[in-house]
Amino acid sequence: MSYKVEAVPDSYAALGEGPHWDVDRQSLYYVDLESAGINRYDFKQNKVYKAKIEGEIFASFILPVENKPQEFAVGCGLRTVIVQWDGVSAVAKVTRTLFEVQPDLKGNRLNDAKTDPNGRFYGGTMAASGDIFTQWKGELYSWQAGGQPNAIRSKVGISNGLAWDVKAKKFYFIDTNNHEVLAYDYNQSTGAVSNPKVIFDLRKIRPEGPLFPDGMTVDTDGNIYVATFNGGTVFKVNPSTGKILLEIKIPTTQITSVAFGGPNLDILYVTTANKFDQPKPAGTTFQVTGLNAKGYAGVNLKI
Image (cartoon, rainbow, N blue to C red; front, side, top):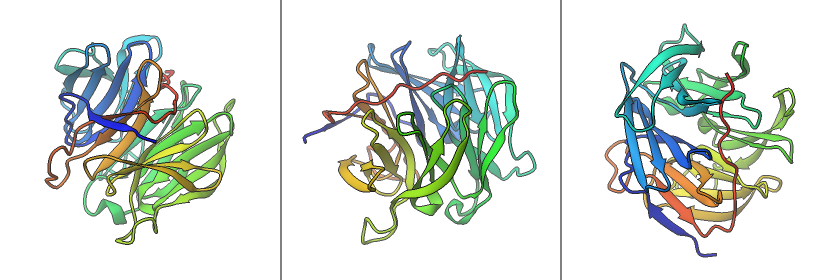
């Protein structure tokens, strides 16, 4: 199979994360995590619009809000806030806090978060300073409109990739510090998850040492795509067998996350980071075509 990897123009983010494809606007939303940056790549215009959230340090994720075209849920520290943004302006503003987690652990922050197929929030936390790869202070949560955050898992190192396969009734989750992907049984009607099992282990893929799994997505055939923060690779994996079906090579090392998008949902968008002075093109968002696979669009958050 021959796939093609191309840079999205002017897509640089020092810590690009959280790609989310919005069908209505035919746009890819993603964040520049450590500078409170939120970005929108307009597919038709082939152009990236960038904004900073006024008064904030972090923007861990960006999720469009259902029926509110200029409102987004964004992770700012330990708060999930509502941000007003027209998708064009260079400044965005927080209008209110939706909920907060771990308020007593000011050294933590939210990390990756997504909506499940029914528009519920799932996301988690991590340590924000020190050696983040050896701390286990995070938690994984779910939240739905009208409720409080519900802790799914404690003693999480770096709460990261999330994906759902409705047909297989599975929820997939990555704690980067465990070097593995978990599959939970997933009840779509209630949002409950249970019975976590390891389905993909990244400790022994490379002889030089364990790989750090980061963001993740799923295709319509039920395969998962796992970004590796120190591996320069996205792995396409069959979650039933744990077998690697394809290694998608990206021309930089720190691969942070992945999401399918484009008019036919057959382009894999890949965010990357430029932490600790990586050579170019670190921090670029890439598009991968020719994978002969399709994914699912992002789902708006119901609040």
